[in-house]
Amino acid sequence: MNLRLIAFLCLPWALSAQTFMMNPYGCKDAVLLNGKWNAIVDLYSRGEPMKFPLNRKPEKKAEFLEYAFDGGLRLDVPGDFNSQLPELKYYEGNVWYQRHFNTHRAKGHRHYLYFAGVSYEAKVWLNGVKVGVHEGGFTPFQFDITDQLADGENDLVVLVNNSRRVDGIPAMNFDWWNYGGILRDVFLVKRPEVHVHDYRVQLKPGSRETIAGHIRLAGALGTQEVGLTIGELGVEQLLTTDAQGWVTFEIAAQPQLWEPRNPKLYQTRVTTGNDQVEDEIGFRTIEVKGNELMLNGQPIFLKGVNFHEEIPQRLGRAYSDADAAMILQEVRELGCNFIRTAHYPQNERIVRLAERMGFLIWEEIPLWQGIDFANPAIFKKAEAMLRDMIYRDKNRAGVVIWSIANETRPSAYRDEVLTGLVRLARELDGSRLVGAAFDNPRFDPATSTFRLDDRLAEAVDIVGINKYLGWYQPFPVPAEQVHWEVALEKPLIFSEYGAEALYGQHGPDDVAHLWSEDYQAEIYRQNLAMFRNIPNLRGTAPWVLFDFRSPYRFHPQYQNGWNRKGLVSDRGQRKLAWKVMKDYYEQK
Ligand code: GCB
Image: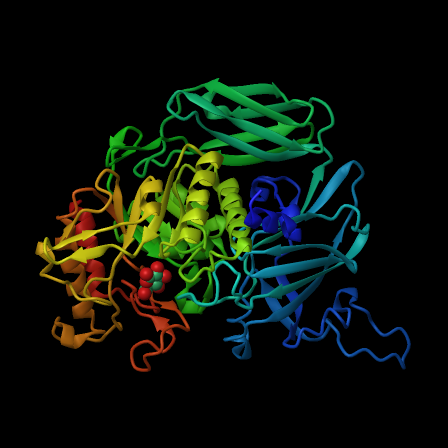
C-alpha cells in the first residue's frame, strides 16, 4: 500500500462517508425546516467550549449564562448569511443557527435531517447531542436522528463555518463570493424503517428501448418487494430485492427521447410497502463519435452560457424556484440549449428547472485553480464531492457532462488525482461524458496555432477551453488567423471567454477603451470569428451570464467587488455583447 493511501485511510472522515436519500423533494413525509432561524455570530470559536448546542436557559434568577439564541439575530434559511446583515458582508467564520421544531416520533419509522447545501462545514446537534459533521458547500448530506428525536418539541443547532482552507475545495482563492450559511433547503424526513434510499432509472447505455437501473432500499433485512411505475410508458414492474435491499432491472419501453426542443419527462414512482418517491425522469443518449457530440444519435452544437448560483440584484445566493426561473429565463432569452453551472453543483431547483426547460447541463465540482494536490486529503474530499454530485443528479436527463476540474496546472500529483477522478466518474456513471476545463493551451507563433500538452486532456471525453483572448492576453495575431489544434480527435467546448464591461460605459471598441460595452462586444465578435478555425468546436459558453460579486476584483471605478464579465449587468440590463451572442446562437 502506498503512503498516500495509508494517509487517506487514517483520516477519520474518510471512514464515515455520508450518503443521503435520493430526492427528498419527491418524498411524501418530507417537511421543509425553512424559515427564520435564531443565530449567533461566533468570531472567536467560543460556542463549542461554552456548550451552545445545549441551548440552556437560566433555571434560577441568579444563574448566569453569557449566550442565548432567543431574542437575538434571526437569519433566513435557506440563504447565505453574508447578504442578510451589513456587518456579515465579508464575514468568514462561525455562525450558529438554532431552531425548534415539533414532530411525532413514529413507530416503525426512521427520521432524518437532510441538508441540501451548507457552506462550507456544518456540525449538527439535536437536543444537545451531536449527530454529525459535513464538509463541502455544494452537495447534500443527511443524518439519521431517530435515536435523538423527542416526541414533541426538538431543539436543532447547526454550527456553520465558511472559513477558506488551504486543504479545502475550493481552497484559499476563488473568483466568486464566499457565501456562508445554510444556503439551501433543510428537510425533516420521516420514512418507514424499510424505504427507498436510492434509485437510478435511465436508458441502458447503448440502447433507446431499454430502461435500466437499480433501486436500493435502506433498512432492508431480507428480500423486499419494490414497485417501479412509469404510467405514461405503461411500465408497472414489481421487483424483488436481494437481502441487502438491492435490485437491478431492465425493462423494454419506447420513451419519447428528451431533447432541448422537446424536454419530455415522465412521472416515475418507486415504492416499497408504504414508502414512495416520485420523480420526473427523462430518457436520452449522449455520446461522442470521433470529435462529434451526439445527442440521441444526432450531432449537436452546444449553445451555452455560464452562471453562478447567485441573484445579483439581491446580492445573494440563489435558492428558490423563483430564483431558478429568473436565471434560466435569461438563459433562454439568449437562445441557449446548454448551461455550465459554474463552478460547483448548483441547487436541485436550478438543475431540475433547467432540465424541464430543455437545457443540457455541464455540472462540475468546485475544484478550481489553487488546489494543493500534494495533500492526500484532497483526493478524498474531491472524490466525496464527485460521488455526491453524480449520486444526486444521475437521474437528470439534462445533465450530460460531469466535469472534474477547472484550470489546474499539470504536475505529477495533479495528474494522479485528476485522472483518478476521471476513472471514478466513469465507474460511477458510464452513461455520461467526463470533462474538465483547461486554460493552458500554448500559442505557437511559427504556425499561429494553439496546442495543448496535458495528460488530463488525453484522459477526458470532452475538453473545455477557457481562454480570454482580448482580455487577459491579446490576440497574438488577428482573430481570423488564430488556429486551434487541441484534442482534435475529441469534441472541444470553448467553456469560457469574454471581457469585462461596466454597463452604460461606452467608447470606441479598441483596446484603449477597456471596460466599455463596445470593447466587450468587439472581443466577442473576434472570438466568434476565431471559432471558425476550431475544427472540433462543438459548443461554447461565454463567461458569464450576469455580473457577479467577487472580492477578487478591486478596480474602484469599474469593478468594486464585481466581476463585470456579464453579458447582463448586476441590475439585469443587457450589454451590447449580449446581442452579439444572441445573433451567433440564432445562426447556429
Ligand atoms: C476563469 C475562471 C472563472 C473566472 C474567470 C475570470 O478562468 O474559471 O472562475 O471568474 O476566469 O473572470 O477571470
